[in-house]
Each structure stands twice: as C-alpha cells, then as structure tokens.
Length: 148
Image (cartoon, rainbow, N blue to C red; front, side):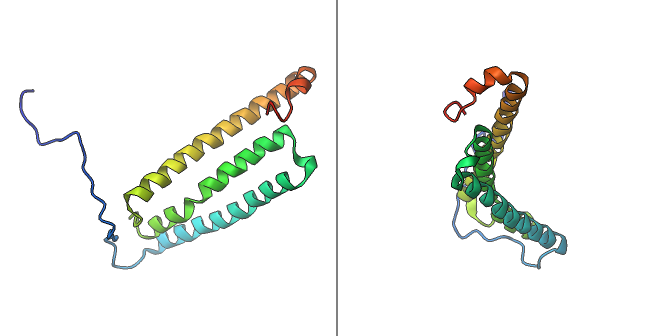
C-alpha cells in the first residue's frame, strides 16, 4: 500500500500532426470489402434521409406531429452518416485512425450524441403513438405542432 508505483493517473498525449498509420504492407481484402460496404451504407443513407428531409419540409401536408419526429430522426441519422466515411477509412487501414486525436474525439462524441438522439426520438415517437391510440379524444387537443 505504501509502495510507490510507476502508474500515473494522468495520461499525457501529444498530437504531432504528422501521424501516419504504421500499416505499409497493403490492404487486407476483408477490411477493404468492409470499408466499401460502409461507403455504400453512407450513400444509401444520405439519399434516403435526404429524401425524407426534403419531402417533409417541401410539402405542407407532410407537416404533422409524427412527421416532425421522423424529420428529427432523419436529421440525427444524417449527422451520424457524416462520420461513416472516417470510420470506413480507419477500417480499411486495419483499425488505424489517421485523422489525429481531435478528429477522433469529435467523431466519437458526435457518434454517441447521435445514438442517444436517435433513441430519444424513437422513444418520443412511441409515446406519441401510444397516446394517439389509447386516448384518441384527449390526444387530439395535445397533439399539435407546438407541443410536438
């Protein structure tokens, strides 16, 4: 207990902006296929969520309470999709993150934030649907765009 140890509770990291991945031997075909698959998910996600965002904002009939929840979920997904190209490049390089510590913290923070945002949007949508189905008469005065 009284012994001094070499373990330090603080971790000092210096980012020298010249960080290169140690991988120089080529790309593993599995990692390349996985990275390409992630890029396909990125493209499909941007097209699909972009279409949802466009349709809900463009057409007046689509501006319902439920659709605004869907709009927020699609917006959260779009923000998540911004980090997928970075993750796919890291996968292609065999798990090496070539973008530095700041981008690492930013992308993982955004990833976590969007995960919780998406979960909360789904919970609110579920509660809204429950109220609309179980109490349709009371729900009509509470379910408006301002409340939503």
